Length: 270
Image (cartoon, rainbow, N blue to C red; front, side, top):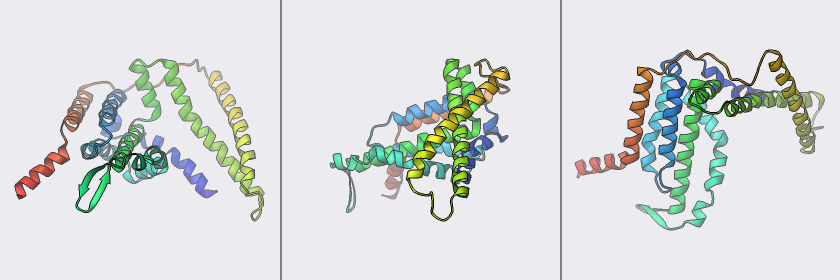
């Protein structure tokens, strides 16, 4: 039970990290959002056999996390939690594509294994960068930035509600698990059949809780409009941030820097 409680409260750590006061947190959310979108486009534009050319892109999330004081260990654990989905996407590639593409001495890698590794790298880059962006901006700040960039308000409000209701669902799940643990003795009531009933109760309790939250919001004057403070403005710092990283992404995309570096080193040695 304590482990479930700890996992739930750990979900809210991204919001706590987003309340820090660093140079990255003080940047306008629109600059960070647009730069990250350019990063994602550059990463997904590579072919399925590209591996070495993707490596320089790790510089962006690592630099952002370091400047924003985001623990890399925490991000790594969050990535590990969702890694099975990425493995499931590419797990059949080694079986379907057996043509040998890479030979490293006695080691031979087929095209399926190369594309599988490429999928895992792109997954780490895209999901890891999204986590860093939320941890340095907050999900509410990202929704406000989307709205200020012209995204329809109904979409941003739905995104924000979806994010917030994850916590509602988590709270109700923790209460149910705690109640079950307090009412059972030994191993009674711990079978898998109990979880079907718990899931049904969880759905009903969450719907009831969501309705009460909606009524409370309407009583406080919520009209469907996303409001918040927009202290940061697009200025020289945001321009330098976006331009600098944009040029870096362009260089990473046009040139295989690890391959060029390796060729230069071997040329010097030879």
